[in-house]
Amino acid sequence: MKKEIEFERQLKILANRRRLAILTLLKIKREGNVGDISAAIRLSFTSTSKHLTMLERAGFIEKEQRSLNVFYRLASKEHALLGHILTSL
Image (cartoon, rainbow, N blue to C red; front, side, top):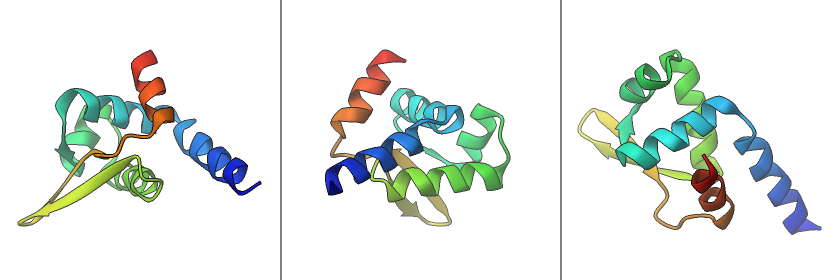
């Protein structure tokens, strides 16, 4: 039952076009900071940051602090589910 709950949570996170746009962008660009990502997907800085936090907490992306900037990239340990979804986009 626990696996089903976690799978459902991951699917809910991925069932959002803005988060899918972020993941697609990170697949293409390899990494980006909140400003770059928000400009690319045409979403406010605050909303983009919230989506990035959700994706990070779910383990789909990871972040790295460099000086004053935080850069995001796809998680080094790719989820099988995410791999299938990004291949389909």
